[in-house]
Amino acid sequence: MSATHDDIDWATRLTAMRRSDALQHESLQQVAARLAANLGPDPVVVDAGCGSGGMSAALASVLRHNGGGRLVLVDATEELLEAAQKAASAAGGETVTVTTVNADVGTASSVSRLPSADLVWASGMVHHLPDQQAGVATLADLLAPGGTLALAEGGLNQKTLPWDLGVGRPGLEDRLHAAHNAWFHDLRSAMDGVVDMPYGWTTALARAGLEEPTSFGYLVEHPAPTSDTVREHVVEHLAWMAEILHDYLASDDRDTLAELTDPAGSHYLGARDDLFLLSARSVYTARRPH
Ligand SMILES: C[S@@+](CC[C@H](N)C(=O)[O-])C[C@H]1O[C@@H](n2cnc3c(N)ncnc32)[C@H](O)[C@@H]1O
Image (tube, rainbow, N blue to C red; front, side, top):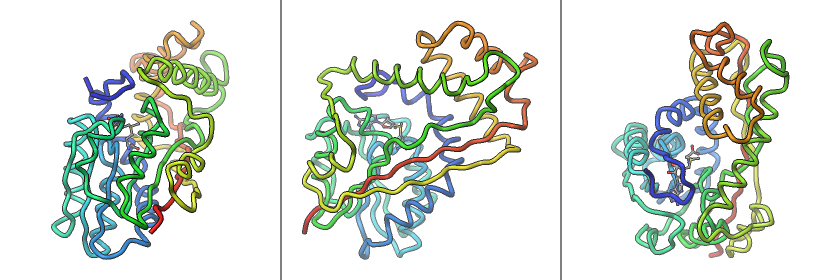
């Protein structure tokens, strides 16, 4: 089990996360280049909650291209940290120093040993902390004067399926998104020490003492007709949704999901060529004052 606050066994997600990293490769490369554009020579960059290392590798490759630097990968799940280190070291080559820290970002003292950073990236991690504002403050405290904190949070839910699949009620994917929202609310409510954050991420960044909060979005798009990697991603994603959203879905939708993810069934998604992947993610940034 992982040492996170969310009761998710992240280590079991490794294969799926690596596939997702591959599907986001080009987009992450562009985001990394954009964030690194203002870094000085030999910068220190932290990837907090790095997961399997898709963005770690993108950051490493941009640092390498820019002449080098130091990349510190942080995650509470050891198995993911190892995968991220491999990916980042391969992308960074000899000019980028990659180190790892197994730490809980939700406990300020556990990240106090990190070096002060010119850029801190945290994607899809802060919303897993019981006190998100405290997590943003902890990440902001890692910054050197003038350093940037970039949070990738929210955006648009991914779409992958035709509206009418020829099995079950049309519009399954929208109902999955609604069920996921309810599941996520319950997941947060069950965390020890949960604190509401009833405002958006630019406000959270400003409340952490950072300047010039702003945001941009990026697309991840793999149009139909699709590739094997997208097909595998969609089948795995729906199987995971069927598992975690079991209590949140109507029984006919549960039956539909079982049919769609059954390789022996006539409605198996893995045999379709009309799947696709379209999602948009938001990145919120702000700087520590000099
Ligand atoms: C949704 S994944 C995001 C992974 C990666 N950043 C990405 O965008 O693909 C969440 C990651 O945050 C890590 N995580 C969750 N809670 C954490 C905590 N309290 N401290 C450090 N890492 C945490 C998990 O182990 C997992 O790798």
